[in-house]
Image (cartoon, rainbow, N blue to C red; front, top):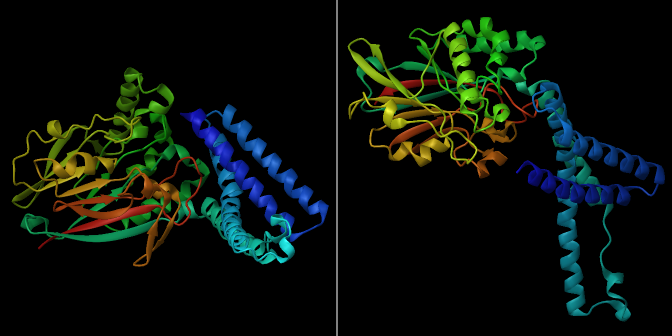
Length: 414
């Protein structure tokens, strides 16, 4: 699978490099500039290709450099190439039109009336390519620390009276293994922002670490400072198993990793729910909180989230909140489950850490083509799903347009 992906990226990158060079060739006839562009393109291509073959995937610095360099190098070129490809489509259509209408003067060779590339188009392409170039730099340097609070109010006619106005804070995908300890103060500001919301209860919806449970260890004192009146609850995400380092078949190593992570969660006051439910009390009323282990639709994701087991002590007609890391669980299992999950909280997608969001105008990320429910609020079968965009990052060391999120949900009777 990995070799196939590398092969596809190799082929696509060759197309991108070809079209990028065409723009430079159109804009300047000076060989020195063309040679500099070729030298840079070949060098960056070889760095990425060779490094991707021999990279230590457990080395955070190597992975982040490779991903950052790749995105910074090829995303602008992809935009530039797309402009030239559109121009080539126009040139080809124009050529076919001229050929079929036989309007070429003196019946010259067909190639003589094939339109030349225009400098204006190449200039436009370079201008558009500069936008993602600077956006990626901003996302790597500042964007991954631009923590945003997203506030939502949800109304339920069957919400117990005592929980009217109840405030839930949610974090997801903190991926503490991706952060450098020198950025401690920046992460601390994000936690302070969470505490300023003064939630009644705190939920964490998976992916504490990238692979190893010990990645969270340097951050325990900071995570202990998260405050909520009625407790703090957590679940596992796919990365918490360690399957990407131990292998999908090594269940023993995965469970040892989870056991150690469970101890760390207990140390910071998080109650890790693994196919388990608890009753939350307020006044004379109760609601159910259910937490399941990871269940993901993809073939390489763990599927041991057991709704049946987690809800065995829950009666029909009770108000239920479910924590499930992967939003694909909602479409495949949750929305048809006999016991109604009024609200499901998920994460996992990160919004791909790249996209465009302008409230009321556009909400787009490439991840939507894999996860139809990838960020924000969704409703089906009279059940809500909220997908948190993630607090941390993994792989690409930044966020562009999809900012790290702290969610505050207020439950209302109505």
